[in-house]
Image (cartoon, rainbow, N blue to C red; front, side, top):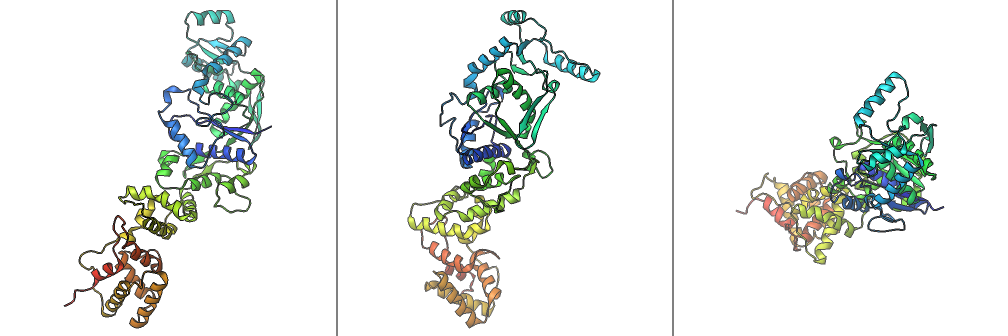
Length: 486
């Protein structure tokens, strides 16, 4: 039987990291076994739905590299993939459960029921749900006359047991399931009912979701039994926590996929990080692309304990993936961040090639795409109108020699720069840091940065191209530091 898995987000806001991890694990399992991934929007809680949130979730999933086989924007063989469009089907199942006696109309006030149930628990006596004893015909008469009522599922008498993929056999006593609501007074289904019907109708064989749904599972298993359906297998993923071991939330910083994207984290890096939460590849290599993740991932090797989100580890992975991007892909990914910083771009092939070389030079020092504009400062730096430091005799001689070498085109290549620097060092007696640190300071305004042998030729080339903001030549930068001729 073909494995069928699903990811079923609610369009109530942004896709957060915990849900993204769930989506990723479902996708990896589906791809690893040659199965199908179904995307279903669970939008029955209309009061909490946010307009446009579903499309943003779809975009975030695709940015992570997660594609689905059936669902919104794709289609499939199982009808609508939004719960709100399946209401008639849900209501027909509710009616079936009422007809068979597995569910009943309840007219009791929610607050009163809660108080009475608590009192019964404290007294150590069984709680009798209001409505259980009402004759079915009388209940139907009340409903027909407009009496407000919910529909409750009649909890089983025996314990509910099921097998969790990470925890083994588990379950609860019947009284812990309780007579939960499956339809509201207006006839709309609750999550517990809708998710069971949808998973059954869409032939889902394996439900992988967060540990926060573990408490819902016994009631859903009981519903499957009452309907005579085979329940899927269940696996509940451990939670993603903040550094303080509390559930990851906004107070821990960026926790949504969209926020990570805006910060310049690479989508493939975030997917790589999420798969490593509670799982380790067999060969202990941590930098994985999508194909490597699919080939290596094993759900059985996932830890059942909660995991702590580590921003530093994520940014390290982003750095690793950034360095592996082809030059043109890196340029395309980085350009929006440069545009936000005020840079302009042309379609000139020479300018495009210059940006490719520039970004490959800068990428090793950056962890995120949004760091690249600040990392590029040495390329666009311009010295102040008046020198900030006085050059001594030997250093001035070296600087003048570099100006002459730049004007002659000797600094246009890496090899040319090395030859010129070697000759100037031999002539002036300046070596190593004594020569290159002041040179870097005068050319870039910074104490550290990319290797000068690669940086200076790049600056020279950029100064001859229509780049905005303009790149000032090396000779112009060095000349600005020299005292005026008498």
